[in-house]
Amino acid sequence: MSSTKSQLISQPFKMENTQMIRETARKFPRPNFISFDLFGTLYVPKKPVPQQYYEIAYHEFGINKSIQSIEEEFPIVYDEMLQSYPNYGKGHPKFDNCDSWWKELIIRLFQLDRHDDQALALCHRLIHHFTSEEAYSVYDDVVPTLQALQKQGVKLIVASNSDPRALTILESLKIKQYFHCSEHFHCSGVFLSYDSDYSKPTKAFFDEIALVEYRAHVDANYRSKNYPPGDFLSDCWHVGDSYNNDYIGAVRAGWNGVLLDRNHTSEFFKNVRKPQNDGCFLNENPETKRDGQTGNEMLILANNRVVITKLTQLLDIFKL
Image (cartoon, rainbow, N blue to C red; front, side):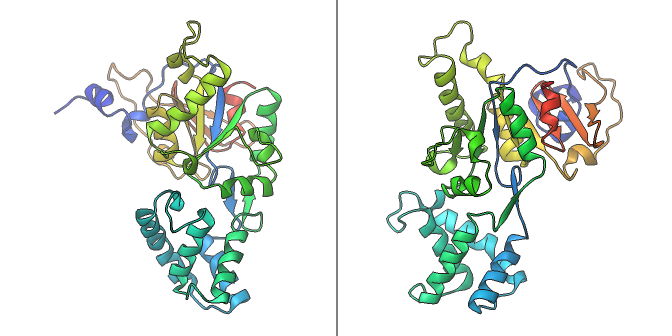
Protein backbone atom coordinates (compact mmCIF):
# COMPACT_ATOMS: atom_id res chain seq x y z
CA MET A 1 0.00 0.00 0.00
CA SER A 2 1.39 3.38 -0.92
CA SER A 3 2.24 5.77 1.85
CA THR A 4 0.46 9.05 2.44
CA LYS A 5 3.56 10.86 1.28
CA SER A 6 3.66 9.03 -2.04
CA GLN A 7 -0.05 9.69 -2.50
CA LEU A 8 0.58 13.39 -2.10
CA ILE A 9 3.19 13.22 -4.84
CA SER A 10 1.20 11.05 -7.26
CA GLN A 11 -2.28 12.36 -6.46
CA PRO A 12 -1.82 15.97 -5.33
CA PHE A 13 -5.34 17.00 -6.34
CA LYS A 14 -7.23 14.44 -4.28
CA MET A 15 -9.39 16.34 -1.82
CA GLU A 16 -7.89 14.75 1.29
CA ASN A 17 -4.39 15.57 0.09
CA THR A 18 -4.91 19.16 -1.03
CA GLN A 19 -6.45 20.01 2.32
CA MET A 20 -3.21 19.31 4.09
CA ILE A 21 -0.71 21.32 2.08
CA ARG A 22 0.46 24.75 3.27
CA GLU A 23 3.94 26.05 2.71
CA THR A 24 4.07 29.58 4.01
CA ALA A 25 2.12 32.20 5.91
CA ARG A 26 3.56 35.14 3.97
CA LYS A 27 1.27 37.31 1.90
CA PHE A 28 1.06 36.48 -1.76
CA PRO A 29 3.05 38.54 -4.29
CA ARG A 30 1.20 41.10 -6.35
CA PRO A 31 -0.58 39.29 -9.21
CA ASN A 32 0.26 39.84 -12.85
CA PHE A 33 -3.48 39.65 -13.40
CA ILE A 34 -6.56 38.02 -11.92
CA SER A 35 -8.96 36.23 -14.24
CA PHE A 36 -12.57 35.51 -13.37
CA ASP A 37 -15.10 32.95 -14.44
CA LEU A 38 -18.50 34.49 -15.22
CA PHE A 39 -21.62 32.40 -14.55
CA GLY A 40 -21.82 31.53 -10.86
CA THR A 41 -18.80 33.67 -10.05
CA LEU A 42 -19.66 37.24 -11.07
CA TYR A 43 -23.34 36.85 -11.84
CA VAL A 44 -26.19 34.47 -11.09
CA PRO A 45 -29.69 33.86 -12.50
CA LYS A 46 -32.34 35.93 -10.72
CA LYS A 47 -34.57 32.86 -10.74
CA PRO A 48 -33.72 29.25 -11.61
CA VAL A 49 -33.18 29.01 -15.37
CA PRO A 50 -35.96 26.41 -15.91
CA GLN A 51 -38.40 28.70 -14.11
CA GLN A 52 -37.45 31.62 -16.36
CA TYR A 53 -37.91 29.46 -19.46
CA TYR A 54 -41.32 28.34 -18.21
CA GLU A 55 -42.58 31.81 -17.28
CA ILE A 56 -41.71 33.35 -20.64
CA ALA A 57 -42.98 30.40 -22.68
CA TYR A 58 -46.25 30.10 -20.76
CA HIS A 59 -47.16 33.66 -19.81
CA GLU A 60 -46.05 35.32 -23.05
CA PHE A 61 -46.62 32.58 -25.63
CA GLY A 62 -49.12 30.20 -24.06
CA ILE A 63 -46.76 27.23 -24.32
CA ASN A 64 -47.39 25.02 -21.30
CA LYS A 65 -44.28 22.93 -20.67
CA SER A 66 -43.81 22.30 -16.96
CA ILE A 67 -40.83 23.58 -15.02
CA GLN A 68 -39.99 20.02 -14.02
CA SER A 69 -39.85 18.79 -17.61
CA ILE A 70 -37.73 21.78 -18.63
CA GLU A 71 -35.40 21.11 -15.71
CA GLU A 72 -35.07 17.44 -16.66
CA GLU A 73 -34.79 17.83 -20.41
CA PHE A 74 -32.67 20.97 -20.76
CA PRO A 75 -29.37 19.29 -19.72
CA ILE A 76 -30.07 16.42 -22.11
CA VAL A 77 -30.80 18.68 -25.07
CA TYR A 78 -27.87 20.93 -24.20
CA ASP A 79 -25.43 18.01 -24.10
CA GLU A 80 -26.82 16.62 -27.36
CA MET A 81 -26.33 19.99 -29.03
CA LEU A 82 -22.75 20.28 -27.79
CA GLN A 83 -21.99 16.76 -28.96
CA SER A 84 -23.45 17.35 -32.42
CA TYR A 85 -22.37 20.96 -32.81
CA PRO A 86 -19.44 21.75 -30.46
CA ASN A 87 -18.50 25.23 -29.35
CA TYR A 88 -22.00 26.60 -29.85
CA GLY A 89 -22.00 25.69 -33.52
CA LYS A 90 -19.00 27.81 -34.44
CA GLY A 91 -17.87 27.03 -37.98
CA HIS A 92 -20.78 24.70 -38.71
CA PRO A 93 -22.67 25.59 -41.92
CA LYS A 94 -26.00 25.06 -40.18
CA PHE A 95 -25.46 28.04 -37.88
CA ASP A 96 -24.73 31.64 -38.79
CA ASN A 97 -23.79 32.48 -35.21
CA CYS A 98 -24.23 31.31 -31.64
CA ASP A 99 -27.77 32.73 -31.53
CA SER A 100 -28.72 30.24 -34.24
CA TRP A 101 -27.33 27.45 -32.08
CA TRP A 102 -29.44 28.54 -29.12
CA LYS A 103 -32.50 28.86 -31.35
CA GLU A 104 -32.09 25.22 -32.36
CA LEU A 105 -31.77 24.22 -28.71
CA ILE A 106 -35.00 26.04 -27.80
CA ILE A 107 -36.88 24.48 -30.71
CA ARG A 108 -35.75 21.02 -29.64
CA LEU A 109 -36.48 21.64 -25.97
CA PHE A 110 -40.06 22.76 -26.60
CA GLN A 111 -40.50 20.46 -29.62
CA LEU A 112 -41.60 23.33 -31.86
CA ASP A 113 -42.06 23.72 -35.60
CA ARG A 114 -38.94 25.60 -36.65
CA HIS A 115 -40.92 27.38 -39.40
CA ASP A 116 -43.69 28.60 -37.10
CA ASP A 117 -43.70 32.35 -36.43
CA GLN A 118 -44.59 31.90 -32.77
CA ALA A 119 -41.73 29.45 -32.32
CA LEU A 120 -39.29 31.91 -33.84
CA ALA A 121 -40.67 34.70 -31.66
CA LEU A 122 -40.17 32.57 -28.53
CA CYS A 123 -36.59 31.83 -29.56
CA HIS A 124 -35.85 35.50 -30.10
CA ARG A 125 -37.44 36.43 -26.76
CA LEU A 126 -35.53 33.83 -24.74
CA ILE A 127 -32.21 34.59 -26.41
CA HIS A 128 -32.64 38.30 -25.73
CA HIS A 129 -33.77 37.62 -22.16
CA PHE A 130 -30.72 35.53 -21.33
CA THR A 131 -28.29 38.15 -22.60
CA SER A 132 -29.57 40.87 -20.30
CA GLU A 133 -30.06 41.98 -16.73
CA GLU A 134 -33.60 40.59 -16.99
CA ALA A 135 -32.16 37.14 -16.37
CA TYR A 136 -29.09 37.77 -14.20
CA SER A 137 -27.92 39.81 -11.26
CA VAL A 138 -24.42 40.62 -10.08
CA TYR A 139 -23.38 39.26 -6.70
CA ASP A 140 -23.15 41.99 -4.05
CA ASP A 141 -19.42 41.54 -3.54
CA VAL A 142 -18.46 41.79 -7.22
CA VAL A 143 -18.40 45.53 -7.93
CA PRO A 144 -16.66 46.50 -4.65
CA THR A 145 -13.98 43.89 -5.32
CA LEU A 146 -13.43 44.82 -8.96
CA GLN A 147 -13.33 48.51 -8.10
CA ALA A 148 -10.79 48.00 -5.33
CA LEU A 149 -8.54 45.79 -7.47
CA GLN A 150 -8.74 48.18 -10.40
CA LYS A 151 -7.90 51.11 -8.13
CA GLN A 152 -4.76 49.26 -7.04
CA GLY A 153 -3.75 48.79 -10.67
CA VAL A 154 -4.38 45.04 -10.81
CA LYS A 155 -5.28 43.90 -14.31
CA LEU A 156 -8.62 42.08 -14.42
CA ILE A 157 -9.64 39.67 -17.15
CA VAL A 158 -12.37 37.14 -17.90
CA ALA A 159 -11.71 33.46 -18.64
CA SER A 160 -14.98 31.71 -19.40
CA ASN A 161 -16.45 28.75 -21.25
CA SER A 162 -18.92 31.03 -23.01
CA ASP A 163 -20.04 32.31 -26.37
CA PRO A 164 -19.98 35.99 -27.47
CA ARG A 165 -23.29 36.68 -25.73
CA ALA A 166 -21.18 37.00 -22.59
CA LEU A 167 -20.04 40.43 -23.78
CA THR A 168 -23.64 41.63 -24.00
CA ILE A 169 -24.34 40.25 -20.54
CA LEU A 170 -21.32 42.06 -19.09
CA GLU A 171 -22.50 45.32 -20.61
CA SER A 172 -26.08 44.86 -19.47
CA LEU A 173 -24.87 44.18 -15.93
CA LYS A 174 -22.60 47.25 -16.10
CA ILE A 175 -19.36 45.44 -15.31
CA LYS A 176 -17.83 45.32 -18.78
CA GLN A 177 -15.63 48.36 -18.09
CA TYR A 178 -13.47 46.42 -15.64
CA PHE A 179 -12.15 44.12 -18.37
CA HIS A 180 -10.53 46.49 -20.87
CA CYS A 181 -13.49 46.78 -23.24
CA SER A 182 -14.05 49.50 -25.81
CA GLU A 183 -17.42 50.95 -26.76
CA HIS A 184 -17.50 48.65 -29.78
CA PHE A 185 -17.35 45.41 -27.79
CA HIS A 186 -13.66 44.83 -28.38
CA CYS A 187 -12.47 43.48 -25.05
CA SER A 188 -8.77 42.70 -24.77
CA GLY A 189 -9.40 41.35 -21.29
CA VAL A 190 -12.13 38.85 -22.14
CA PHE A 191 -11.11 35.32 -23.14
CA LEU A 192 -13.95 33.03 -24.23
CA SER A 193 -13.82 29.38 -25.19
CA TYR A 194 -15.87 30.28 -28.28
CA ASP A 195 -12.95 32.30 -29.63
CA SER A 196 -10.42 29.59 -28.85
CA ASP A 197 -9.92 26.01 -29.95
CA TYR A 198 -9.86 25.08 -26.27
CA SER A 199 -11.96 25.41 -23.14
CA LYS A 200 -11.53 25.08 -19.40
CA PRO A 201 -10.17 23.02 -17.73
CA THR A 202 -7.59 22.25 -20.44
CA LYS A 203 -4.09 23.55 -19.90
CA ALA A 204 -4.10 24.83 -23.48
CA PHE A 205 -6.91 27.27 -22.67
CA PHE A 206 -5.02 28.79 -19.76
CA ASP A 207 -1.75 28.74 -21.72
CA GLU A 208 -3.26 30.85 -24.50
CA ILE A 209 -4.28 33.51 -22.00
CA ALA A 210 -0.93 33.52 -20.21
CA LEU A 211 0.97 33.85 -23.49
CA VAL A 212 -1.14 36.82 -24.58
CA GLU A 213 -0.60 38.57 -21.27
CA TYR A 214 3.11 37.77 -21.16
CA ARG A 215 3.68 39.11 -24.66
CA ALA A 216 1.69 42.25 -23.92
CA HIS A 217 3.23 43.13 -20.59
CA VAL A 218 6.65 41.45 -20.35
CA ASP A 219 8.30 40.41 -23.60
CA ALA A 220 6.72 39.78 -26.98
CA ASN A 221 9.59 37.42 -27.89
CA TYR A 222 9.46 35.38 -24.65
CA ARG A 223 13.14 36.12 -24.00
CA SER A 224 13.05 38.08 -20.78
CA LYS A 225 15.86 36.91 -18.50
CA ASN A 226 14.55 38.88 -15.56
CA TYR A 227 11.07 37.44 -15.76
CA PRO A 228 10.94 34.17 -17.77
CA PRO A 229 7.54 32.72 -18.71
CA GLY A 230 7.72 30.05 -16.01
CA ASP A 231 8.10 32.66 -13.30
CA PHE A 232 5.32 34.73 -14.86
CA LEU A 233 2.85 31.87 -14.43
CA SER A 234 3.46 31.74 -10.68
CA ASP A 235 1.85 35.17 -10.35
CA CYS A 236 -1.17 34.48 -12.58
CA TRP A 237 -4.46 33.96 -10.73
CA HIS A 238 -7.84 32.55 -11.71
CA VAL A 239 -11.04 32.68 -9.65
CA GLY A 240 -14.13 30.58 -10.23
CA ASP A 241 -16.87 28.52 -8.65
CA SER A 242 -16.10 25.23 -10.43
CA TYR A 243 -13.69 22.88 -8.66
CA ASN A 244 -12.64 21.14 -11.88
CA ASN A 245 -12.93 23.84 -14.54
CA ASP A 246 -11.59 26.76 -12.53
CA TYR A 247 -9.63 25.65 -9.48
CA ILE A 248 -7.99 22.45 -10.75
CA GLY A 249 -7.69 23.72 -14.32
CA ALA A 250 -5.77 26.80 -13.24
CA VAL A 251 -3.42 24.95 -10.88
CA ARG A 252 -2.59 22.26 -13.43
CA ALA A 253 -1.75 25.01 -15.92
CA GLY A 254 0.81 26.43 -13.49
CA TRP A 255 -1.39 29.26 -12.28
CA ASN A 256 -2.78 29.98 -8.84
CA GLY A 257 -6.31 28.62 -8.39
CA VAL A 258 -8.96 30.27 -6.23
CA LEU A 259 -12.13 28.30 -5.62
CA LEU A 260 -15.08 30.57 -4.81
CA ASP A 261 -17.32 28.56 -2.49
CA ARG A 262 -19.99 31.05 -1.44
CA ASN A 263 -22.24 28.45 0.21
CA HIS A 264 -19.60 26.27 1.88
CA THR A 265 -20.66 23.31 -0.26
CA SER A 266 -17.23 22.05 -1.32
CA GLU A 267 -15.48 19.16 0.35
CA PHE A 268 -12.97 21.62 1.79
CA PHE A 269 -15.59 22.85 4.25
CA LYS A 270 -17.36 19.52 4.70
CA ASN A 271 -14.34 17.47 5.75
CA VAL A 272 -12.47 18.34 8.92
CA ARG A 273 -9.25 16.34 8.98
CA LYS A 274 -7.55 15.20 12.12
CA PRO A 275 -3.95 16.35 12.57
CA GLN A 276 -1.39 14.12 10.85
CA ASN A 277 2.16 13.42 11.91
CA ASP A 278 3.61 12.43 8.55
CA GLY A 279 6.76 14.36 7.78
CA CYS A 280 5.53 15.34 4.32
CA PHE A 281 2.80 17.50 5.84
CA LEU A 282 4.08 21.02 6.12
CA ASN A 283 1.25 21.94 8.45
CA GLU A 284 -1.33 19.95 10.37
CA ASN A 285 -4.25 21.73 8.75
CA PRO A 286 -4.81 24.26 6.02
CA GLU A 287 -4.41 27.82 7.17
CA THR A 288 -7.85 29.18 7.98
CA LYS A 289 -8.57 32.87 8.16
CA ARG A 290 -11.80 34.66 8.92
CA ASP A 291 -13.11 37.80 7.29
CA GLY A 292 -13.21 40.32 10.11
CA GLN A 293 -16.48 41.86 8.98
CA THR A 294 -18.50 38.81 7.98
CA GLY A 295 -16.86 35.88 9.74
CA ASN A 296 -16.67 33.99 6.47
CA GLU A 297 -13.79 31.58 6.16
CA MET A 298 -10.91 31.63 3.72
CA LEU A 299 -8.73 28.54 3.36
CA ILE A 300 -5.15 28.88 2.17
CA LEU A 301 -4.23 25.37 1.11
CA ALA A 302 -0.87 25.97 -0.54
CA ASN A 303 1.12 28.69 -2.24
CA ASN A 304 -1.06 28.29 -5.33
CA ARG A 305 -4.40 27.12 -3.91
CA VAL A 306 -6.97 29.14 -1.99
CA VAL A 307 -10.64 28.70 -1.17
CA ILE A 308 -12.69 31.82 -0.48
CA THR A 309 -16.33 32.42 0.39
CA LYS A 310 -16.57 36.03 -0.76
CA LEU A 311 -14.80 37.84 -3.59
CA THR A 312 -13.74 40.64 -1.25
CA GLN A 313 -11.36 38.16 0.38
CA LEU A 314 -9.13 38.55 -2.67
CA LEU A 315 -8.13 41.89 -1.19
CA ASP A 316 -6.97 40.10 1.97
CA ILE A 317 -4.90 37.60 -0.01
CA PHE A 318 -2.76 40.36 -1.50
CA LYS A 319 -3.07 42.82 1.40
CA LEU A 320 -4.64 45.40 -0.91
